[in-house]
Amino acid sequence: MSLIQNEQAKLTGTFLNGTAIAALVAGTIAPFASLLYGVNPPVASPVGVVASAGTLILVGVALHILARSLLRKLKQ
Image (cartoon, rainbow, N blue to C red; front, side, top):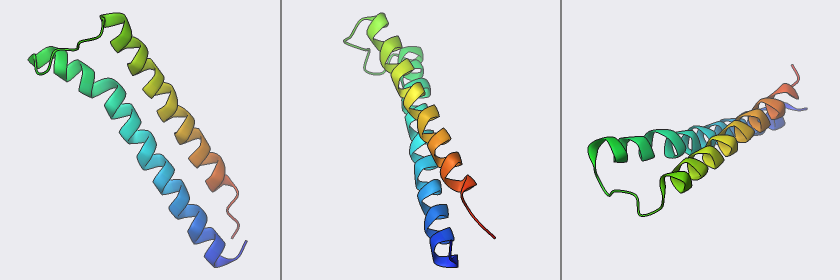
Protein backbone atom coordinates (compact mmCIF):
# COMPACT_ATOMS: atom_id res chain seq x y z
CA MET A 1 0.00 0.00 0.00
CA SER A 2 1.23 3.45 -0.82
CA LEU A 3 1.12 6.37 1.57
CA ILE A 4 -2.02 7.67 -0.11
CA GLN A 5 -3.77 4.31 0.21
CA ASN A 6 -2.79 4.14 3.89
CA GLU A 7 -4.34 7.57 4.51
CA GLN A 8 -7.49 6.61 2.62
CA ALA A 9 -7.78 3.43 4.68
CA LYS A 10 -7.33 5.43 7.89
CA LEU A 11 -10.02 7.92 6.88
CA THR A 12 -12.41 5.11 5.98
CA GLY A 13 -11.69 3.38 9.28
CA THR A 14 -12.31 6.60 11.19
CA PHE A 15 -15.60 7.14 9.35
CA LEU A 16 -16.76 3.59 10.08
CA ASN A 17 -15.78 3.88 13.73
CA GLY A 18 -17.63 7.20 14.05
CA THR A 19 -20.71 5.64 12.50
CA ALA A 20 -20.38 2.72 14.92
CA ILE A 21 -20.27 5.11 17.88
CA ALA A 22 -23.34 6.95 16.60
CA ALA A 23 -25.24 3.67 16.24
CA LEU A 24 -24.29 2.62 19.77
CA VAL A 25 -25.40 5.96 21.21
CA ALA A 26 -28.65 5.92 19.24
CA GLY A 27 -29.31 2.34 20.32
CA THR A 28 -28.51 2.65 24.01
CA ILE A 29 -28.38 6.13 25.45
CA ALA A 30 -31.20 7.78 23.49
CA PRO A 31 -34.00 5.28 24.29
CA PHE A 32 -33.07 5.03 27.96
CA ALA A 33 -32.72 8.79 28.36
CA SER A 34 -36.13 9.19 26.73
CA LEU A 35 -37.65 6.72 29.17
CA LEU A 36 -35.83 8.21 32.15
CA TYR A 37 -36.83 11.82 31.50
CA GLY A 38 -40.24 11.10 29.97
CA VAL A 39 -39.42 12.97 26.78
CA ASN A 40 -41.42 11.63 23.84
CA PRO A 41 -42.54 8.39 25.46
CA PRO A 42 -42.08 5.54 23.02
CA VAL A 43 -45.12 4.62 20.98
CA ALA A 44 -43.81 1.11 20.47
CA SER A 45 -43.91 -1.57 23.11
CA PRO A 46 -40.93 -1.99 25.43
CA VAL A 47 -40.05 -5.16 23.51
CA GLY A 48 -39.80 -3.10 20.32
CA VAL A 49 -37.56 -0.54 22.01
CA VAL A 50 -35.26 -3.27 23.34
CA ALA A 51 -35.21 -5.03 19.95
CA SER A 52 -34.32 -1.83 18.12
CA ALA A 53 -31.67 -0.97 20.72
CA GLY A 54 -30.19 -4.45 20.36
CA THR A 55 -30.15 -4.15 16.59
CA LEU A 56 -28.35 -0.81 16.71
CA ILE A 57 -25.84 -2.19 19.21
CA LEU A 58 -25.09 -5.10 16.86
CA VAL A 59 -24.74 -2.69 13.92
CA GLY A 60 -22.34 -0.54 15.94
CA VAL A 61 -20.21 -3.51 16.95
CA ALA A 62 -20.16 -4.85 13.38
CA LEU A 63 -19.06 -1.48 11.99
CA HIS A 64 -16.34 -1.20 14.63
CA ILE A 65 -15.03 -4.68 13.78
CA LEU A 66 -15.10 -3.78 10.07
CA ALA A 67 -13.09 -0.61 10.76
CA ARG A 68 -10.52 -2.56 12.79
CA SER A 69 -10.12 -5.18 10.07
CA LEU A 70 -9.66 -2.45 7.48
CA LEU A 71 -6.92 -0.80 9.54
CA ARG A 72 -5.11 -4.12 10.08
CA LYS A 73 -4.23 -4.07 6.38
CA LEU A 74 -2.07 -0.95 6.73
CA LYS A 75 1.58 -1.31 5.75
CA GLN A 76 4.57 0.70 6.87
